[in-house]
Image (cartoon, rainbow, N blue to C red; front, top):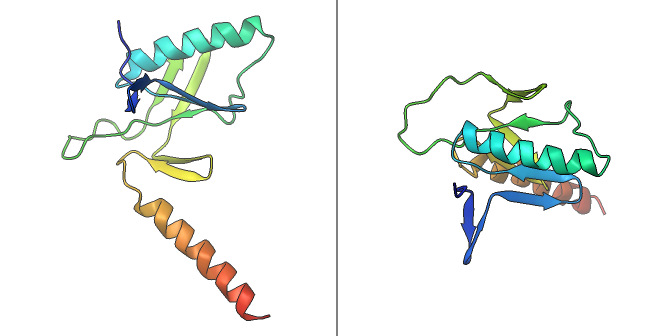
Length: 121
């Protein structure tokens, strides 16, 4: 089975990784399960483990789709993950509506704060 992920250029990606920050991308829980099991097996062989306190999952909904249950957990093997509506990855706020407004508002607040700091000089 070919996993969906996202297309960047000509590449179809289902895992984004930067240092120890990893994002698994799938169109449903089945794909996420498959990716997680594969990643977890590799990590275990390397002596690494998942930080369950920092591991969450998010489902990006298509526009006009009927929202499935907003709250839920995803259980894979002995791990249980909390569903979130948004999270920050590499400084960017991602959300289930695939809407950048929350991230833009946060950036505007930071810009305004820093602008006020510079005006004091």
